Structures are given as C-alpha cells and as structure tokens.
Amino acid sequence: MTDEPVLTQEIIDYSEKRIQEHVDRVQEFGEVLGIDCLEHDYTKSNDDLLESYHWINWYYHVLNHPELGLDEVPYTSEMALASWTHTKLEPHHPEHWDMNAEYRDSEEDRDDPEATKLVDATLMSDEAIKEMAADWCSVSAEVGDSIYDWIAETVDTRWLFTDEQIGLIYSSVNKIVDYWLSNHEEVWWMIGDDIEEEMS
Image (cartoon, rainbow, N blue to C red; front, side, top):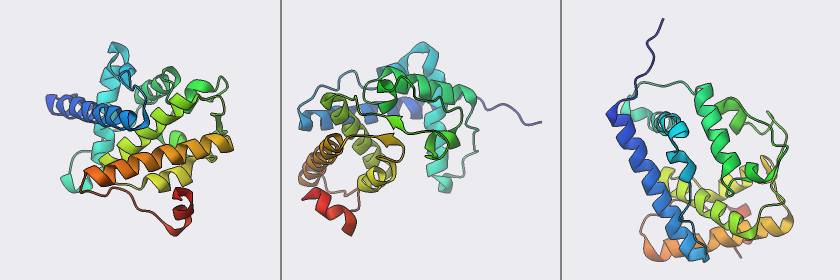
C-alpha cells in the first residue's frame, strides 16, 4: 500500500506562483483585446477548490517536466471535480455556457474528444471568447506549445463553435501573437503551413 501524497509547502508555493503568473498574463493579453480580465480564475482561490488546484498545478508540473525526477501524483476524483466546478462557474470556459455539458470524472476523459459529446459553446459572448483566447495564449506561453495546434486540436472537436466565433478566436489570438512578437524575444508558438492562411 502506497502512502498518500502530502501537500507540502513546495507544492503550495509553486501552485500559488503559477496561478498568479497565469492570471497576470491573461490580464495583460486582455488589455491587448480591450477587455477586463480582473476576475480571471477567481474560483481557483475559493476555499473548497484551492487545495485541489494546488494538486492539479503540481500534477501538470510533474507531467510536463520529467527531467526534474519528481514523484508522480495521481489525478484524483477531487481534482476532476474541482476542475469541472471551475469551468462551470467561469464564463471564459465553454462548459459554462452548455447546460447539457457532461461531467468528466477523469483527466483522460477531460482531454479525450471521444470520451464525451461536444460541449456546445455557441452561446458564448464575444467578451468570453476573447478571455478564453487570452487564457489559451497564456497557457501556451507557459508550456511552450503551439497555440495554433491547440486550436486545431480542440475547436469543433472538443468544443462546438459557430463560424463567426471561430473567426473571433483566430483574430483574438493573432492580436496577442502580434503583441507578443513586438514585446518579447521568446517565440512560444509554431505556425504550420495549414495555419498561415488563418492568420492572413
């Protein structure tokens, strides 16, 4: 029988730093898009979700950095419920807008487009879509993955959008990318041949 993982100060400090840096970037990108993101991810600091989000942040830190040799932690039902609660409460998540969205009780189900039906995001407001784009770009900046690959993998595969909404997603992301290129040296996305015409 294995011991239960212990929530250490190291995990808490990492998680709090990660959340704050993410929110700061989203607010920065929101300004680029002309929207107010001051309430972004407020639910992650709620007493009933905070401990689970410390574990969620640590889970992905361990997963994304195997070179650190950190002990793996399980993705628990408590973490899945915290993630689901957050997405249902905050308007920048498509799940917030779909009354029939299916609860996903594991990390695999959450990221597997075949596990549940498409989440209907067609009622999302323009402001919510812009904040979602800022959120996606912030995560891309953090982990170094292509924002355009993420869009191609999830739009109309995990979440259902209208053509107009998809256009707004791309135009919002393009504005953030242009802003980042003019203000930072690091390039944290890759633009494939199939994406170039989306940026034009």
